[in-house]
Image (cartoon, rainbow, N blue to C red; front, side, top):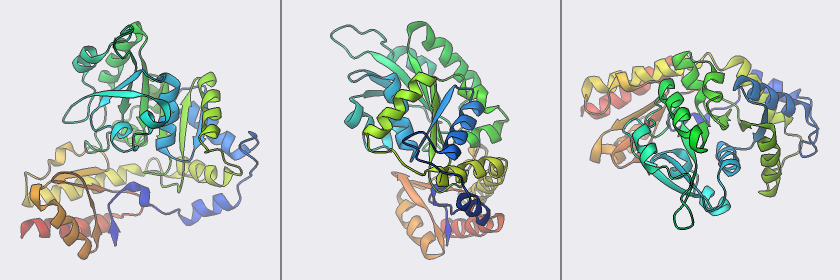
Length: 340
């Protein structure tokens, strides 16, 4: 099977498993795991922030990051397909009392005019006050699109004077960095809190890191435990993340090339399904209308796993466990099915 459902399905490489097996560990709830601490400090430094917190998932990192910026009863603004409102099971509302309002952009980009129109930073006693804006980079459900750096800078200039803060859901920020060459810290410093995943394109089995000011991260550490997500000898998992940072960042360019290859093969037989020039990273969204469910089922029968992410939309994500030859085979399968 060639599994293109997500880049979360990767398995640790032999070298990563070896690094995990030799990790120096301690009790992380006591702050005594040296491998975890080293990973947290490293990621914070890469993103231009003071401190980091290793978490079990990107969803938890987002919940903790948003919680540090938005009080119960306040609101968060984001794009309507953002992971924080579509794929975290309402966690921000359920656990933190956060409400949301959204804008819509076909590429998932920041819409400065919409943010300006929606933002009510001090709404008084009758309306909900806006506390923060969340941005996803790359934007998963928009097709792995990269947020333009100039737009992010303009967003910072827009919100700072009125005290609205920014959270970056950077689950695939590594992909944006490799696709554009923009330094990670140039993205990271524009935001008050940043969450990055190690278990997607980087291929670690578990884990994300939340970074931000030292005081905010210290409070997030308390909330992590309060939500039942403290862990003990987590250095075994942190070692995988550190190995991934050492060995799996630059190779993301291979995933981007493989995604473009698949998109080009599909576009050759069905130009309406996808525009290959719009495939910026490792995510391909095929707009195939009523054929979506049938395409997913037929592709699985032919050895290619995909998934739907909306009415008529099929998502494919390339990753560490998909070689160039796998991508060519998957491209042939999908193109053949759409040709019939």
